Image (cartoon, rainbow, N blue to C red):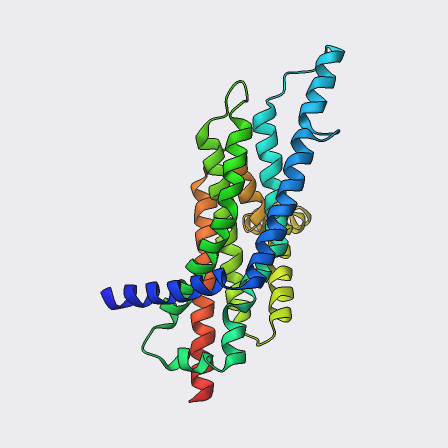
Amino acid sequence: MGIIFANIIAIYRKELQGYFASPFAYIIAGIFWFLSGYFFTGLLLGPDGLIAGVAAQDQQGGGAPVDVAYQFLSLFLSVLGSIALFLLPMLSMGLYTEERKRGTLELLATSPVTNWAVALGKLLAVLTFFITMVLPLMAYEAFALSASNPPIQPAVLLLGHLGLILLAASVLSLGMFVSSLTDSTILAAVMTFAIVLMLWVIDLIADRVGGNVGQAIGHLSLLKHYTNFIQGMFSSGSLILFGSYVVLGLFLTAQAIEAFRFQRS
């Protein structure tokens, strides 16, 4: 067990160093920060933002009280989830495609390190890089929301970002599996985006089907379970679903690499 854990850590450190040395990874982070900052400012301080809307409502002297902090956090995290939907496939597309291009995938497939350990190390590394992208956002969210009255509960802030990280882990795990099937990074990104988009809007299919089958299909929705977290509701069912997607991606990746090993033997 100790050897497996050491192998996972070794893969994790190697992959994480690769991300922090990759100009492309910094471009992805820069795009993420630029878009998140743009929407942060627009939703909160823009001419049509929440603060301007509440001020106009107060001047008119009508309408129900608005919890600006909670409403802003929910809207902003919803936007971040949509941005992540586009950017995460770009982070996951090279997890195995680069190994194929460099000819090192066969070495990985035939090495003493188990396929599960390699896949888990790679997933933890790319997820860690994404978390480093999210941490600055949490800092200026906490700073901006610290002035709210009544103050927003820290648990709501943390729960919403936990949902974002779980969403990212699910998408990256599925994207890793897709990248293990092809040596084209562009194809891997497009296929991952298509799969994730289907899981994002599968509620629409569920509504059309209806009945028990529709409910079962709707339970697979990433959007539905992510919404639970950003609304401050902890759901064990949502936690299990995200965990299931992560395990599924790891399992399928390990099987794909095992199939590749048999093809080469």
